[in-house]
Image (cartoon, rainbow, N blue to C red):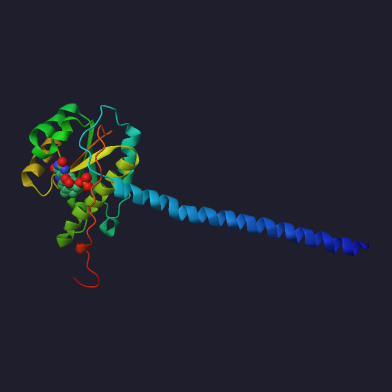
Length: 213
Ligand SMILES: Cc1cc2nc3c(=O)[nH]c(=O)nc-3n(C[C@H](O)[C@H](O)[C@H](O)COP(=O)(O)O)c2cc1C
């Protein structure tokens, strides 16, 4: 066989090899992309559908790292104009938690909780005038993110409303020494669950309207 024939055979083999490598790499990338689109999304959906309010906790300590994860999730929420008017007070002090549990009928679970996060809004940090009302939506979005993150890492939590009840707002502001213009939206009790309540099925197609009400 001539040298040129050898060369052509060699080049052809090389081409086949390179094509094979390219196709197999592309198919791996494609699989990764498909699983990236489905797996995390389904676990997010699963967490949304299985979260429920938890009002009884074990005495297991919630680590600082876990609290940071919750706060990072809270601050990943969307806000109007990306103003991020949320502020958070992390409460671990037993006396403060017991005080809340003793003084608010709807928050008795605080006496058992090892931790609470009070989600507040700084009114001056969002839009002025009628836009100021966005603080409620912004801090509520953060709250829901925090609740979902808690559920995702095995914690149990419950959102206890403070705002708009003026007596609640006053008591929390005094208790936590909140400066003027910082309004407490809620107090979230957090701990490792000692119960496993079933999530409620709230799906109701009658609440949905298409195109117009
Ligand atoms: C604005 C708001 C205020 C709430 N306040 C309280 C409260 O003070 N005490 C309490 O035990 N649960 C409170 N909850 C929790 C609700 O009772 C609970 O979300 C509702 O019953 C639905 O149950 P689920 O969270 O298990 O889906 C509050 C929830 C929201 C959104």
